[in-house]
Structure formats: structure tokens, C-alpha cells
Amino acid sequence: MPIHTLFAESHAVTHVGCRRDRNEDRWLARDDLGLWAVADGMGGLMDGDAAAQAVIDGLAVVPAGLNHEAMVQAIIAAMAATSVAIARRAAAAGGLSGTTLAALLWCDSRASLIWCGDSRIYRWRGGRLETLSRDHNEAQWQVEVGMISAEAAQNHPGRHLLWRAIGLPGRDDIDVAAADVRAGDRFLICSDGLNGELSDADIGQILHGPRVAACNQLLLRTLDAGGRDNVSFVLVDFVAT
Image (tube, rainbow, N blue to C red):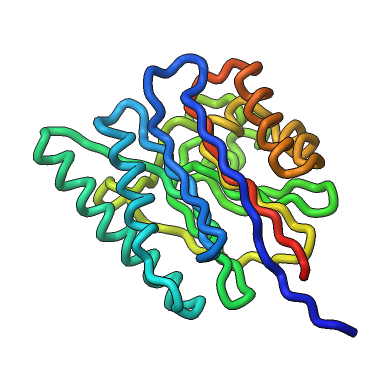
């Protein structure tokens, strides 16, 4: 039986939305490095766009040629340094600043999910959409302790109360988890401007289409639903050679 190698192809989209004056989301799509990410600057705090850009800049300088574990550790170290830099810059200006991070790493035929905050990582496989990350916010905590249902969390005010973010000292811990990857899998990395407007069922239905067409449809449906926030996402397809 032939042994197949997986390779990844991606497409990224970002939009200011229908109600915001500026886009505080940023994204990274490095098919060559096997690293894809979305950062969502926190609304209500200062310079969210600069914080999100700092995260993407920090990821962009992670060196190539490392093995999987070294790559994960390099990303964690880069984000720790970025968090300190964001906090110091904000403190010097008399305020706070922060951003989420959601990233997918594919290296040495292994995948890791890396995230902080409420930007999400989904896997679409065989027509089924699964949330692989766990939101670091009040609404998710209430779901986990049984106070509200997962459905209620979709529109719960606690989903805007982040428990973790890059740039907030003492609240910038990063979660890392391994992910199984098979040929035909599709990963969606997104800011909450997407899942805040569309249900998981809606997202999963749209993901049946070709990659670029699916991205265009996700954006159009998000804007049609109100586009209350910036929306950014990276769609990554794994194909066997």
C-alpha cells in the first residue's frame, strides 16, 4: 500500500465588518512553514490592532527548520515576549492592551493547536464540524460548570469577557493541544466575528464548498447576519500527495 504525504493549502480573509471603524484583526498564513494564525485585538482596550499585529509579527520570526516540539516551544516563547512588550507599551501610555491568538502548526507530520482567548480553531471532517479549541471567556466557564447551555453561550454577554489574552500580565497563559490530521481535513481558524454571527451548523454547511468559494460565502453570510465585529479567518485544507 503506498504511503501518502499530506500537504496543506490555505486561503485567508479579513474584513472590518459593518459597524466598526477599523479592523483590529490580523492573520498569518504560512503554507511553507506550516503555521496559520488569527489574532483579534481586544475591543474596549487601547491599540488592539497594534497588539494583534505584534502577535503576528512575533510568529513571523519563528525560525524554520525546527522539529515539532522545538517549533511549539519557539512559538510559546515568542508569545511570552510579545505579551510583555504589549503590556509595557500600554502601561507607558497609561492603559491596557491585549489580543487573542489562535494558531495551527503542522510540522513533522504532526499538528498542534495553540491558542489564548476566544478566537477559535475548528476541524471539518467528512461533513462534520468540530470545535477543537476552548474559549477562554466567562460564557464558556458557565457552560462548563453547568450554569448555561452551549446554545445559550452563543449570545450570552459573558462571551465578551475574556479570561485570557496576550498582553494581559498574569492572564496570558497559552493552551497547546495535539490534533489528528487526515487527508481531506479542513481546519478553520477564526476571530469571534465569524462564530459570533454564524452558528456552527451554518459554518459547517458552508464549508462543503471549494476553499475560496467557501471563504467568500462565509464572509458574505457573516456580513448579511449583521457583521457587528471585525471578521477574520484562515481556511486550511490537507491534501494527500
